[in-house]
Length: 123
Ligand SMILES: [Zn+2]
Ligand SMILES: [Zn+2]
Image: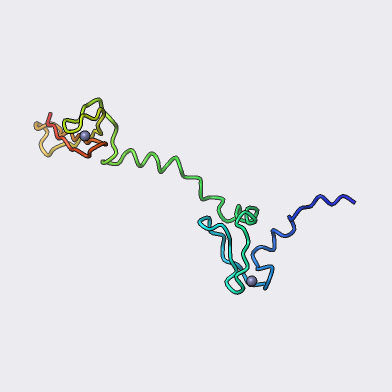
């Protein structure tokens, strides 16, 4: 006589409205409840936890990749020890760009993350 089951058996039926049997929309994390389109019966989104795993299993994997592509972007280069001449902010973003002819050297772009001031230096 051990009946320790809670509401587990109820979980598998959550694709359908328990009230009228209509197929429920997919749980959206922006909302607290999933509402039946026909009878407006609402089910708290936490009840979908067991089901959700199957459909969103691969979603939160490529986090590391997104971060590395961000730093290689021109606007978000590495910070260098340089003081912004406009606002005095210490540490500016640093981007180099090779100019057309080799004897001209490279152009260095500094960007202030604080006031968005841009400084260009030719070396
Ligand atoms: Zn319903
Ligand atoms: Zn600045």
